[in-house]
Image 1 (spheres, rainbow, N blue to C red):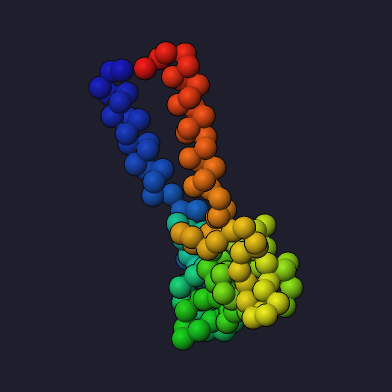
Image 2: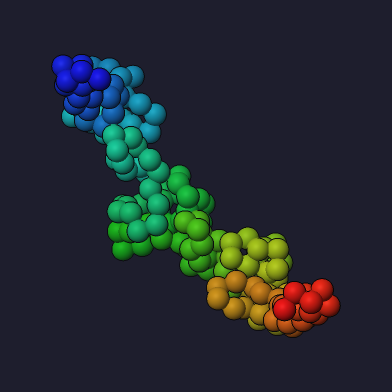
Length: 175
């Protein structure tokens, strides 16, 4: 590519990087709130994110864990969902819920009333509500290990598999 065309291409890219995104937070909306995008409102003649949203790369996205907030509703529109709340000015999970993969769900040792309360988050389909304690735990045959319910016979199964594999390899005289 000739130098003059390369220089022209660079100039175009630089110019495009300064182009304002219509409706983005900060855009002039004097007299017409319709100029603002979804999740925005016209505040002091400028588009601004609604309280439950934050400005991220010129786009209003739902608030998540540890984002600033003023009311519990500020934290319910995003990944925390209906189990999100505002605690000490920060979005967090409601009491009785734990953070897992940016969502608030029941976790190990959280309070519960039914098995379905415990079958999301890091407990997954191996979670259950223990009747004696009303706390989430792992179903019989599984233990809480490394933040998840893991099979109690996982190591035994692995040992058997390795033994069978080695036996098969030795019978073929590979070693």
